[in-house]
Length: 589
Image (cartoon, rainbow, N blue to C red):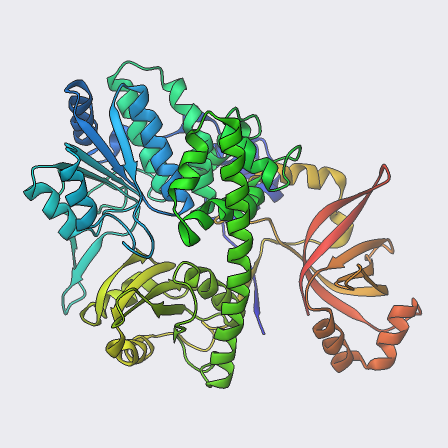
């Protein structure tokens, strides 16, 4: 079951349409994305690099850049400490290439997911001291690394934190929050409560990019050169699933242009290995094909493979790395499906479906894929889900959580800090570790303090506009392309149409997994509707409502009484040089 909501934001659409030179339909969709400021709307419709915010507005960024500048000029050794996912990979590449361009003596280290866990730690700091490192820069991590940062300072190593994750806090009985920062030489994070940077939703690579822009200015390097890094930053932005609005929209738009014309040997090799050569790379390609291959190296092997692939100048080595990443990702997919099946069995056989927050211990799943499985479980049951597995310490379990929009996972877990060994994250996702003896207490407390209602736990579908099928045209579909690239914070627009007669139905595909419906518009025209969901479930719901005889008539193309409401996206079908309008049915009732 799901709830449908028609977005109805009250604004003057005529004024927006006139000011920006767009249709009222487009204006309404943009407002539905939460963008009401005309300046941000202009940036959304006409994204361009000159609309990026001044990086110097970020607190501590000039302090951090000056530390790096002095280290470069003094010939000091600089080490970047990143993360093992795509955003961490992109952050490392951005900082590494930027500092190299300025003449820095720089290398990088990536924590091993199993041996080290997330983020900089004391082992990495001690190794840096042994290696004669003078300055450490974290990227996409570090905002909660209090002990590691303190150790670095005690060993005489300068340390700069660049991160985008939520800042830790202590909350008193009245609900007042005291935010806590690591004691680094500079802490650069737009989510710092004292940071006035106008956009808070950059990914780790986005923060690294801002850092490099200021560094280039200090070294007299043209800002245009910093834009060469946007192909990395765009990958991190899409794969870290941050909202594609404001600066992120500009970064991804410009980054995709560069990715589709890339000269990077490693990226070209990966595009070829994944079967994307000759195709247009878009946000789907980054988020669901290329990004998962990069992530697979950090999940099942060493994350350095992916970084080295992007850095190498040797085509044969790039090909070898790319094919290895592709194979690792195929292995990861198989492991994920097996783990998902085990978790579903545990939920359904263990009677956990009534719990508001799933806290599930599944020791057989590799810790690198528990976040993926948690996301799949969250989508399936629409519950905040934390999936835990065994860590290298037999008494400690660790895992990842994925949340729903009604539940701030970071804040709720913060209330259980006394039960945890460590945790970090943001409202929609988190990583945790705890002693196995605290598992039941953790589950009970999260469920006991959760204020989620029954309605909160129903999936919500938000409709942009009620648009009868007669209004669909080639011009409309062309206009909607202005809204690309799509992603989190800027999903494909969803339209709704009511009481549509179904003239005929067909089941297509070699696996019989596509339902094609001939839909009749109010003006008597017929348009194809394609549904890629659960066809058996679709048929059963129709039988409940209309009866088996009407379904038989529908499949035979005989007059019947079946009508449906749909939520859809308009599309163009191209076949043997002919183009026709169709709709992709996302939801029905």
